[in-house]
Amino acid sequence: MRKTELIKLFVNGEEHSLAVPVQRTLLEALRYDLGLIGSKQGCDKGDCGACTVLARPRQGSGRGEPILSCITLAADAQDLAVTTIEGLAGPQGLDVVQRAFVDCGALQCGFCQPGMMLSARALLDNCPKPSLPQIKEALSGNLCRCTGYSQIYQAVQVAAGMRKPSARAPVQAERAAPSDSVAHPVKEIVP
Ligand code: FES
Ligand code: FES
Image (cartoon, rainbow, N blue to C red):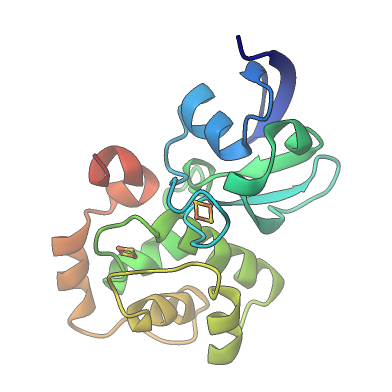
């Protein structure tokens, strides 16, 4: 029988005590123990970025930097404060990054979006007015099989207040993903 261990995770502002199998990854703990299925299980080996979450030391400030939760052991994340896509929206509603992705039609199947948005959020937290090369570099670890990336890059520029969405983008966004699905992407988009 597989051994379990007791761990504590601090996720989206709440501490959770969990008994998890030894070697549980952070992604598995988020999805299967905490029910935070916005973090996607794609390649499960650090290649696609779908499992990206933000993390910082618990005593630190801000949301932190992107990490790949599929190659991070849950036990090793105990000293971190983790933000998942479920924790990105605030009391006022969607984060500006989430809103920009909708307004720019930067959503198709939605599988890459939680990780992509969190990487974009971390970029803008560190660099409020990034250049296009900086945006491409910051999102280079997040693969998207659907969009061709241009609407995603545009969305980051819109979120940064550097441009307006193109005129036809909101129609695409409406067809691709209602705004509520940005905050709860897996439940609504992934079977
Ligand atoms: S699931 Fe692909 S990098 Fe983690
Ligand atoms: S929208 Fe489908 S993988 Fe990016």
